[in-house]
Image 1 (cartoon, rainbow, N blue to C red):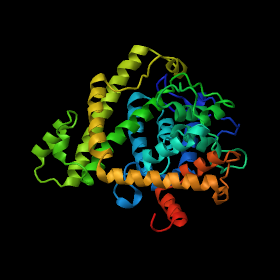
Image 2 (cartoon, helix red, strand yellow; image 1 turned 90 degrees about the horizontal axis):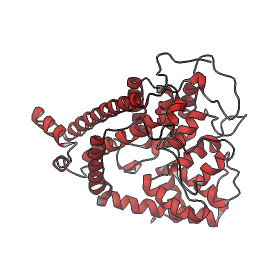
Image 3 (spheres, one colour; image 1 turned 60 degrees about the horizontal axis):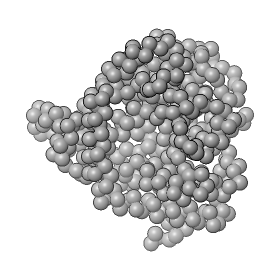
Image 4 (spheres, rainbow, N blue to C red; image 1 turned 60 degrees about the vertical axis):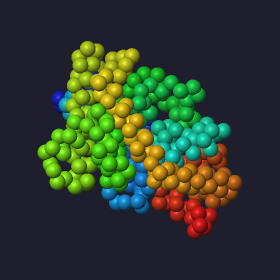
Length: 381
């Protein structure tokens, strides 16, 4: 089996992978984690991320982030951190590209209403749905359901935010681990921890970029945020005639650099203190080894509070949130009452109609959901 040189002892070495649920011959030209990444990129669910958005709906502008561009940016940040720490870039990239595959249309607004509607049927969780997508709903291969990814990629998809201790577990997760144990009570490998923080870094800073571009808040308001204030002051002092777009980009890129440097520095300290020699020893630790410093955690909390009040609760965003809730709720009611409107979803043999409805709606893009709503409920919808 192929291996990767220059990896740290505690990294995820592809030659030591726990393998795939369904056995396959190894590739002579790609490692196991490189194959995982490639399978994710070629999946239908990954392509659909192009028309799924986080804050803005797809038709509001060509330059706002979609789930696809966000995932690519998370992958770039994750690779940079892994390279500095001697971790497996390919595994981190695979996890970054897969982490949003379970998201509904219309961002968290869509997920919240779908979770509420599915509560009598086990609820809805986007991490559990991502696992369902890559292990069941993607049906591209003749020999097995899903993408048949390695144990490490499945583990990281479910546990990148830490041990999963929910009681009860999300239904999709519980169903899968009954067949294939992903050891939910421990931390995932360091690459999954990197992917989680890379997601945080990309999300916060690209929302600053998009929010400034959309004029949801002025740059002056960001000067109230301690993490951002010195960056803005330096930019405004050095570049007197910057456009709004340039200011947005320069602010975000500097903050990303500062956060990445903080993660690398704090993680090196924690890894040295932990003294682990294998990924198994790293998994057994009581705390994450990839982390922000205490100062950055506090600073990021203030930034998130700013974005929550100034961006996510902005009247423009609230209007779209209400529309998104109505669209998802109406479609769920229609398909549940009249399941003949449901297409046959490849890989989904679930006899439970609400679960099939949730699979269908979760897989929709913003655009398709709006078109379906208009088709069934008329132009006035």
